[in-house]
Length: 351
Image (cartoon, rainbow, N blue to C red; front, side, top):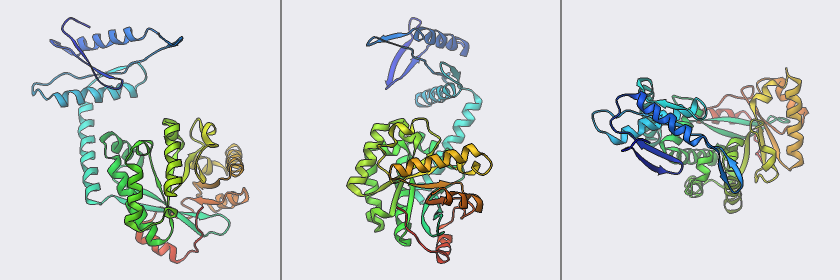
């Protein structure tokens, strides 16, 4: 660092550097490059050599002296650097400013939607392949952005907890109303939240729903982020509250088999990409067949997501897959549409 520069630890593995008397971004960039060069040398810990990479965001202070906005701008630039690869630095600019304003507006819109309970849920049927009976529904949130972007906004803004509580309450209410199983997607961050079990229990009690009415869907990627803690939380929810779990998007992660034998759940949901491709790609069908066999050997049932044609449904039934979900069966439905859908279908409860 230069004489007079200030270095501080903000928390965790995040540090900030305050550079005074900077003429332009080039001087700050030169300092950032020196920091990265200094941290590039390997570090020996407990006899093992570790290499640490650093992502750096750079922001130039404005004349208004808003320290909070100043740090936020540098933080945004840091995430841009991370997105571009490892050991990068990025400078906050007009484009990032526009992106930040758009993100903040979306956050505020989402906050109001949660408070006003105007966020719409849709419900896609999960159907028995052998009989066509409705086994339950998956609750899917619908908003002005796609679900994955909504999740990122909610997690980045700290709104994931109130959003999760809203979805749990609404799904539990509908499950009790229809006397059907409704599954809800939960993220790794929700499962790490100590208030989540209480929110789940409160949602069931408020709706008059039983634990058998709700299923939690957890992706492989969510478990990968903190396998031990996530599996422990799911086991506790099962033993203490009786709420069951599905492993979602199976076939997209990298470490499924490492924890699959310990997964405290009841079913696997095969990734839609594998299911959609099974009619045209023999390799995809072999993978689907293998996953079904693996699940059954572990005492798990299987839900195939992405059943888009009658041929998909027929082939899945022949392979022994118990349940299917996809546009051939039904698109995600509003609550009113669910009632009409159920009037014309037999029920066959999910595991």
